[in-house]
Length: 475
Image 1 (cartoon, rainbow, N blue to C red):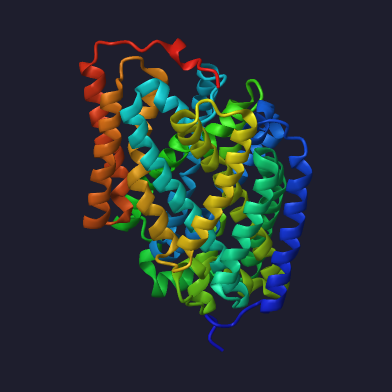
Image 2 (image 1 turned 180 degrees about the vertical axis):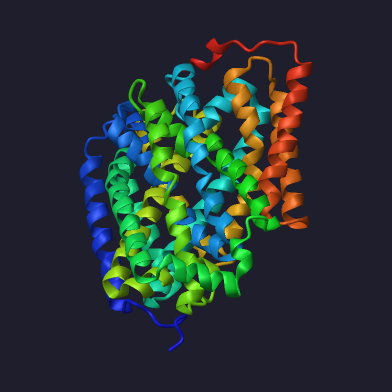
């Protein structure tokens, strides 16, 4: 039988697993949501998240469809550098650790990354930043929704649209009830599931298909996958470093956590989260190298990870794979829903249109935004317009342009709003040109370099000094 159409789970079992997880997570979100008495409780968990939950949510949120589905896809396409290059995205969490501590000191009353850009650089830079943030957030949301459908389709043959709709409904449900408090609490559980599950899958794979056998197969029939000088793969390695930095440095997913963590927890939590995350894409990517040996040729490259694991481990293994990948998707999707709705509520509704809004109105609007984002994401996921890797790397051209404006904005008083806006706008355009003219593996790299050069000119020419006290704005 063709292994591309031989499913380890029947569709009824796949749907039952989704239903069980859905009921558990939504009930848990409702239970935790009872503690939310204000908008600050809902959006930032009362700014009192301790170290264990903080480290777990940092790690679990970064284990996304990228790590569990795209890392195997890129390993399948680019070889060894695909999985090693993806592991370098851990630098985003590790290097954000000192930035998170700095953010907490500069903005003790802040809510979003948009607050920082508005206060530090002014309206022009804020508009450019918000466009970048919205494009990235929607791209990530759509990729996560797509991944839910791909997961169920790869393991059980269940229709893509059913899996995609189910994971969106579940994550919207418990985020709507519990806010960031529910997101972080479920992330802690999901982090434990992911670590144990990924280690278990890798152990059984190496026990079933030996490393020597995999190496012999690749050396004979697919030598380029082992070539450490494979040009596209080497470019991807460097591109992915800057893509990961841009993703974390700019995204309100991580800023909201930095502002929600208690006291001096932020630095230690992000550092530990990054170190825990580092080996996971190597393990998940390695799974894809066994595909040729097992005779697995997936219909699309982003299905290779779950198909290989399910083939090696059988039905029980397929259930484990399903639980691990589902946990990874949920831990990121809920975080992105909460953070993006915070950005819309705070930066557009409150600061732009309704500065007189009451706490109750902000809380209600935040919930409306979560529901609206869920519906919009569902509509955009329906056509399944691209593979996960292509969709995610398109966003790299946008986010990499924000790295140096944010770093210099946090530590340098001389960078002005005009140069910050120019760096983000021109960097993004240069990245997009390189994406279409050269390939996805250089978009973030070009965007970051162009942005850095403009920021350097801005620092050299500026004679004004920003007053850090201007960041102390209260809600």
